[in-house]
Each structure stands twice: as structure tokens, then as C-alpha cells.
Length: 340
Image (tube, rainbow, N blue to C red; front, top):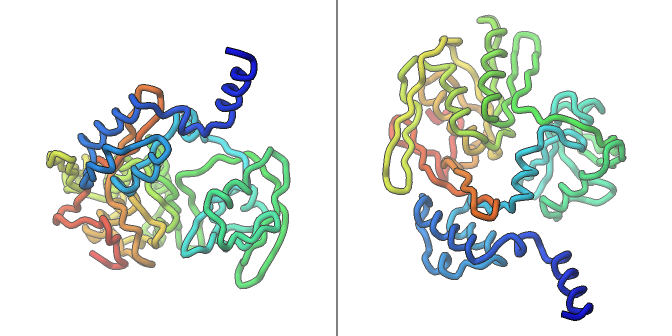
């Protein structure tokens, strides 16, 4: 092989997208087998048979609207985001508008923005019409660098700079307003959220009004959400029924635990409330422990599982249907305020 061919091959490797580099025939065969065995959605065999690396993300969406494929590098990065650099906020897109929800004590929070606020522009670029990842990339940058935000806050347009800093994404935050205790659940994180929630609940008295805010909670670990719901239920009360692709059923009941509350709480929901958050809210509403307030939820009421492939990449696939004790599901329709 001459030097020109070697240089061409090196350049091809450098500029070929990671998806193409990581995805090969063996991986595609593994994906096909996993989809056929575990998918709870009807499988279009033609789509599955014609699966290619280039069209993998789009094809997966046609099979399972929530399915994703991650290269080994990307998946490792997602699992190791205990500390991040940025403005310390969740980026939310709703009806072509973008919003920021600051993490408590993060960089944006310390600049005085403590609640959800509409994002108009970032670094002098209007976000209207931009794709989600385009907006998100504008937030990325080295620690101690500046990012300019233009926000609509309390009816007033405001522009200012925020210093990108290290912050740790929270799964739960607590705010107190006189006799109200607001617990903002942002994500059900494995072996974390239940412990934090239980600890905070023990500090609340019967004179406090408890509000659980799920409006920015996109889900997380289903079993962590069930453990959190069990804190409000009596032992052995049925929480959900899980059904896999083969029709096998598993009924999950609340374990024996200390009853923390015996009065109604208010749960705030909206279209950004999804997945495990919908299950948590739906269980408490079903048993009359909580009243749902706000707007209908997303309607993503299935459970997903990560399958590790031979090259280290990961396929995330919907593998369980979820039903409430009365046999109903919120899949495709969401929870409605005061639905139960």
C-alpha cells in the first residue's frame, strides 16, 4: 500500500462518524435479535431486515419510538456525568420554545434565576427555530468561560453573562415557602432518590403542605420510582403490573415500610412529566394519596432496558408494558389532572 492510500485511509477514519465506525454487521444482527425477542411494540420485519448502520437511529424509531443506540464512548460518557461544566440548568423544549430550569445552587441559580425561565437567545443567537442539540452545544465550553443568555423572566427581557462552572445535577431539590414544602423531583436515580426523599419527608410536619413537583421530571429508574411511591403506601398494596413481550406478568407490591404520611399531597405535572415520573404520580393518584394538578403528562408509560452489545455499544429498548392496579395505562395518553 503506497503512502497516498495510507493517508487516505487515516483521513477516512478521522472524519467518519462514530456511528459508522462502531456499527458493523455483527452488531446489526445482535440488534435484530434483541428487537425480535424483547420489543413490546409491533415489529415491522421489512424495517428490521433492511437495517443499516447509516439509517440505524431513524429505523429504530420506526420500530420503537423510545429506542436508542449508543456507541461505547457515548454511553460511558452518559454514565459518568456526576459532575458537569455549564450554567447548571435543565434545557426544556416545549412547543418550539426553550426553557431553562436551574439546579439549586448552580451557576444560573446564583445569578438570581431560581425557577423555570424562557430562553430567547444564547451567545446572541436566537434559539427560535434551532434544533435541541444546536442549542445545547451553545452551552458547552471550558470551565470559567462566559456564555451570554437572553431570557424572558417575569415578563421582562434580560441579557447577562454566566460563568460556566462545575455543578452536580441533582435528582431531588427542596424549597420551603412559609408552611409549604416543595420537593422538586428531577430524576429517579438508582440508589439515590428514594433515600433523599425519605430523609426529606421525615423533616415535614403535619402542619406543612407538601407539594411534589414533577413538571421537569423525564423519568429515570422505574424501580427507584416504585420505591419512592412505596413510601406513601401501605405494605402489600399493588403498585403496578409489568408485562413483557411474551406476555409474562409481574405484579409489584409495596414492601413493608414505615408509613410516613396519611394525608393528601399535591403533585404538579405537565407535558414534560414522563416515564417513571408518570408511574410514580399515577400510583399515588390511584390510591388517593395525591391530587394531580397542572397539565396532562407526556404519555410514555413503558419501561426500557439497556442491552450491551459485543462491541461495547448499547441498545436501549422498551421491554415492559406498565399497568396500574385497575388495568389502565397512561401509555399514549398520559395522566390527566385529577385523573384518579
